[in-house]
Image: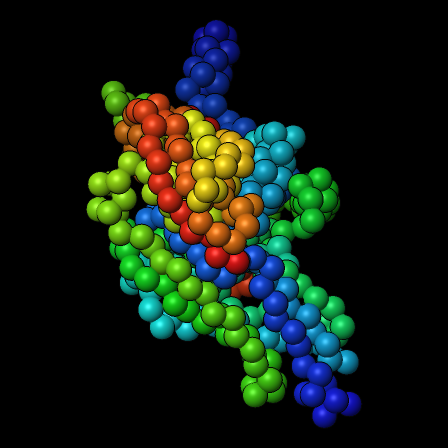
Length: 197
Length: 236
């Protein structure tokens, strides 16, 4: 049974996009599912390996009703069960690119391991301050956002997007190049975005 | 000469009042719930809201202390709370609730209602017990200063070698906003903590302004088995 459990091991799956941009002093929450496929209960170590990250970036891992601040923790998962882990990546004052590995391994079989790469960054503030409207990941940010008219590169109007929490979500657009006419309390501005899937 | 005896009796009666035994010697234990958390801990509000409800239900017959671990930007409680985190061996995991110093609950229940019911059952079990020491606080005011005297009904039940007194000052409705934190207003926040010897009586002074709308909690705790023996508290 031991051999079988080593072969089957576990499955570690991200439930959210692992490409994240975090505002300085902001945060991002990513969910992961850890499925124990073995026939026995297991304890898994969860470890953040920083390849590139701002020095004041910090992490909080929450599961089973508890939160664990720091770069590592451990979770017990019953045989055949799965648990959801929420990883909060919390930005500090420093900016820079983000490239980390979220490593999981069985405490009793350390070769049984998996990892998920999380990339993105904490964008440079100066650049954002110069531009009144900017696109980061799936969102358009800007001061006094009111709406965004979405046009194809041929000039065909696809629809209008409205802000929620002071940002406009563009993740619903399919692969391609779009022109957005952004209306803000300061006026109008056109920007071009490229959606990749 | 006949009148001398009654007059002497009256004078003696007035000058020397016989000691009145305290009626609350056999008072009940005030159950203590110590919650360790931090603002960005997403599972902590559930426990904090349950302890808020517990306090609303039982008022001054329960004692709630929320220690904010200095993690991920939380600075609400002072570093002195490390004395407590070391006593209970609390690392960076939250929420962690310690009941009466001895019962440890890691994490939160599935809902606030379940959490409250669990706390209520602990409260009822503890409340049925008698306080063997009977710690109590008396206050006096002098200008802008509040003089606090801590004493006990049964000093002989205190073991000064292993028992200590924790003085904590907590505050309600503390506004603290952090990105990613679910709550921005916190209750029962430990704002000051001091470790004192268990020799009684003890006198302490605080400015009136400092204590305004704060809650003073003095607890006698056994540092070996961690049991909280007696609690006295006063709201200002």
